Amino acid sequence: MKRLLFLLFPAILLISPPCRAEDPLLLWPDGAPGALGTEPKDTPTLTPYPVENANGPAMLLIPGGSYSGIYEGQAEPFALWLNEQGISAFVLRYRLGSAGYRYPAQLQDAVEAMRRIRGEAAKWKIDPERIGAMGFSAGGHLVSTLINRPEDGEIDGRNSAVSPRPDLAILCYPVISMITDPHPTSRRMLVGENPDEAVLRQTSSELQVHPGLPPCFLWHTLEDRLVPAVHAQLFAAALNRNGIPHEFHLYQDGDHGTGLIGTAHPWFGDLLFWLKGRKFLP
Image (cartoon, rainbow, N blue to C red; front, top):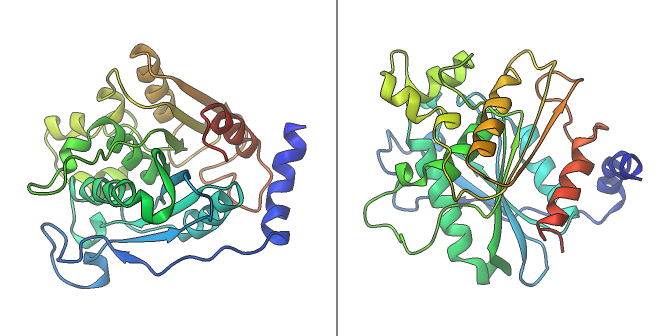
């Protein structure tokens, strides 16, 4: 039955009534902290894909792109897929290393996005205690940092009464470590050419896990030639050591980026089964 479900997912997108994105919201209407200009690359946005479902779940969706771009194949297609599951989605397009932004600018954007979503939960008709974050590749690294060290993205004077930490996290073939077998482009774009050891440890998510984090779902493939599976393995081991509820799937087949919308892959069904257990499906 599980195999039948995930094989049907791409078809569901074709036969169900289409959902629509709302206009992108400027994440920082008065200018992002430390902005290097006022061009689109300096003005991160949050695009809502709301579902008419009173007090329903929501997901902050963070695409990857090696911190040098935004891979759109991990943006709207997955927002629409989440909508089909009854989950409101919010796509974050954050500042990038290729535009001159280094850590923690990206985390500042993620923290502000979570605060915006949770702080305006009534407006979006979502449950403020059922807001997750889902990231792919470098976006998975940003999600892992968001749950580990949201304090690094804090801005003086912002509404700290609203928690920026997601209620659960989904990491898809994530970049995790800046020390062990790092992905060179992601590391260079995030922390620069010659980061010191303290920054490398601070941004290596497997070293920052601690008790009290939200439940996590993560998956990777052994055939991934861009971001080795050891990244997800290190993070899963750290979650286990710290007693964090989690589910880790290590699939044999598929290179980096496998299992995108329109493909048949068991991770779709495995994720929905896990979300149901977390009461994250309507």
